[in-house]
Image 1 (cartoon, rainbow, N blue to C red):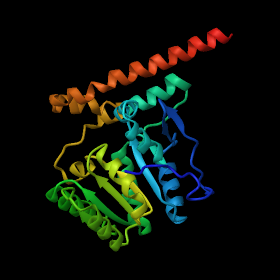
Image 2 (cartoon, one colour; image 1 turned 60 degrees about the horizontal axis):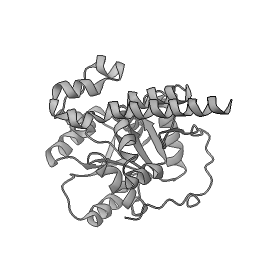
Image 3 (tube, rainbow, N blue to C red; image 1 turned 180 degrees about the vertical axis):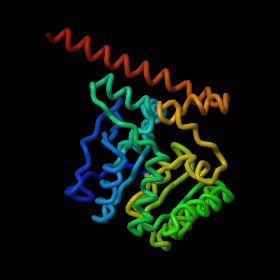
Length: 268
């Protein structure tokens, strides 16, 4: 898999809604958007300019695993837009730099982009999830946004990526949302982005399961406090292995902060 970055490939970025400068959280860049509106505006500018964008929802698990997996780290480095998907990332930014980075969750960003797509006529393609979830999610999105142009969908159980890419390109989609689970979806986008025509590509994990009603989203209180991970753990205790990464991530952040402070004191 050739994931080498070519920073000069697309030329200079000049937009009326400039992208905020990234914040590096343990070596992974996160864009500190002030609001969903700003994030959507930046995406709109890039689509208008016909500039390809690879968006990744950055959470503590991705950052921690990238520290141990060079291939995943390379994929995250390749992303044009990294949104602050987890409260742990927001806390890390405050601990390391004293900077406030607002959460921009993947599912909420997806809905904001779908709403804008419905209003301005962007065409979307949904890739991933099970056949039933994919179909039901499309039906529900179409009911909620009657003007939305869903020009294609493909479930995630396929073997021939070339055929899927041909289907995506033939659809004329402007935006591609990939629901294959992380990091599989990010690897797939990174590997195939050059061959894919849509200007905007984003991995959305289990979002289509929530849209379809197959999975219940965390209640508002958990979403408001950024503790959806607790709700998921309560609902599915088997997730503890996966979520055990969270304290390890915070320990790494604190260790980095302490080491930086020790170096500063030594230089004083």
